Amino acid sequence: MRYLLPLLLFFALLSPAQGAWTDVFHKEFFHPEKPRVEKEVCLVCHDSDLIKPQYRAIPAEWRKSWHYRNDVSCQNCHGGDPNDAAKAMLPASGFVGTPKPKDVPKFCGKCHLGIMQNYLESGHGKALMATGKGPNCVTCHGAHDIKKANIDLINEKLCSTCHTYERAKVMKASLMLTEEKINQLDAGLKTLRAGLISTGDEEKDLFRTQAEYRTLFHTVDVTLVKDKTEEFNQRLAAIQVGVQKGFQELRFRQNFAVFIMLLFLGLALTLFFLSRKSE
Amino acid sequence: MTSRIREWLEVRIGLDELVRSQLTDYRVPRNINLFYTLGMVAFAAFLLQVATGILLLIYYIPDDKDAFESVRLIMNQVPYGWLFREMHVVGSNLMVAVLLLHVSSVFFFGAYKKPRELTWVVGALLLLTTFAFCLSGYLLPWSQLSFWATTIVTTIPTAFPWVGDFAANLIRGGDKVSGVTLNRFFALHVGLLPFLLLGLFAVHVFLVRRIGISAPPLGTEEERPWLTFRHEDHPDGLPFYPYFVSLEAVMIALYFVVMFFIIAFVPALFLPQDSLTPADPLNTPEHIRPEWYFRAPYEMLKLIPNRFLGIALQVVLVAIFILWPFLDLSRKHNLLKRPLLLACFLGTIVVWIGLSIWGSY
Image (tube, rainbow over all chains, first blue to last red; front, side):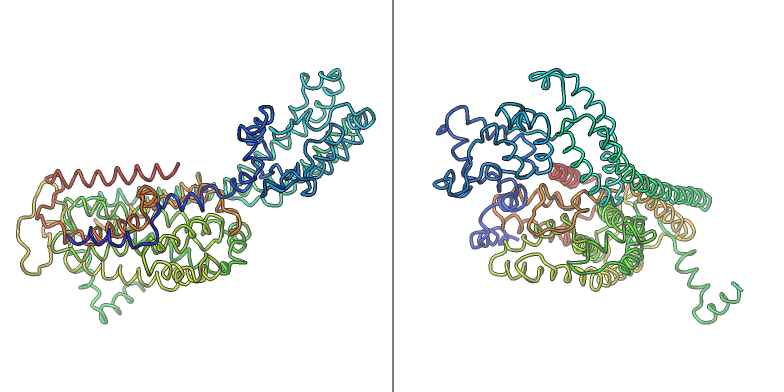
């Protein structure tokens, strides 16, 4: 035993593993994904005093955004070379900088293609293209602190900065029921997942339906939204059937397990009384 | 019919005498308690793991391309496949819990002391084999959780000088966790460990039966020196059958009650979200944590600032655990009369729970 400690120290010095486990675990396993977008050279300047104060808040806003949570980085929107500071902002590297208001739909539409098409056909889009003024994507969604889209983006405060709220209110009312159904289905799928019921197909269908439905908002065409809502409701009803089947399965599993549990509880009690008797 | 079978067996194996000597005339201490049934509960848990494991084997495909899909099929398409998989998953965790309680109670009652040192050593090896079972089985669903948890565990041997990388590569079948690792762990889980565990269990039961069941030392203290072999008899005790067997049956039934309670009300307790997505070697999930029973040693590894010392300390602690009966030379069985050891015992439990909770956040 007395040689144990010196031996351990001897091997500890010889071991190639001089660092702590926590370094290894942190480096390799804890936050391996976030640093991928954090490594971009853009942040080196934008996080420092080198940059003008009005641009310094951008990284902090972005880190709070839905884009950040989904690994959408500076380069994905603004282009440029994210790995080389010298080339980061060269047009040759594809850097596009800050778009003019009229170019914002195309800027965001690189990824949100369906939404861009519906937007450009809308009153909002037409006004922007004709006059260079009018609401574009960032007017409602923000530029860097982009929130997850939801129906509350249609609100009196925001809409009445440009026009009266009346038409938007009608639009929101017709969207509301469908949006509620989507939220209910989403919550139902979460419950099923927690109960280990497979929800893969329904989840994909709901995601697709929700994405397509939300592109419809951007037409700001009340009649079209009302007409199409029925079609979307049918699709949601089909998903609902799958979710209900899932809940039936979940209830069956739970009831079955409770039934067996009660059988064993009865058995335990019977055996307990028998053992007392034999004592 | 029954009496004819009985008579047939009586002529051939002396059934009546066997039942008398091993069950009805065999006496257990009068003050025996429920903790003494935990060994049999653990064995029943193991048998259940074998039975559900065989059913899972019918549909499980031990290949990195098909393993996850086959488990998904078991959970959603195979009739009652969900039940057998849940019983296997919940059962593995409960089996570890029962074994930990069993070890703690044996320690508390001083039942590892002379002449039961070997029984303790074999029991400790049984616990370690069960951990090996859990580790090897964890990878088999080939989910994100199982892949990355195994990646962490198989990194640990690299801390040993000279042989570390070789050992890690031998376990993984390469420098990374891959389909080869899955095949190796599957072979271990299904082809080697069950037989090893059964063999150790046979030796453990032989020793328990050969030496006799120890009486709980609370209130009475064994002072008689143990100089020659003798079977510990309890002539004034209660019959093994029906008294003790029915107590064991009660505890086994309660084990099933707990298992089905978890399956009914918290089915995802041991299957978090990362265990429901297929393994992706290019995408590390955040906050990978080992199972609850490995969280304390994992947290301890992280606290020690040198990797080799961290793992070496754990090896030393395991060695102390296995060889404890040879290190504790006191003849006192009653832990309540040994305040220092009692404080160490309770301290270890508190530290273990503390580290486990810490490791959960």
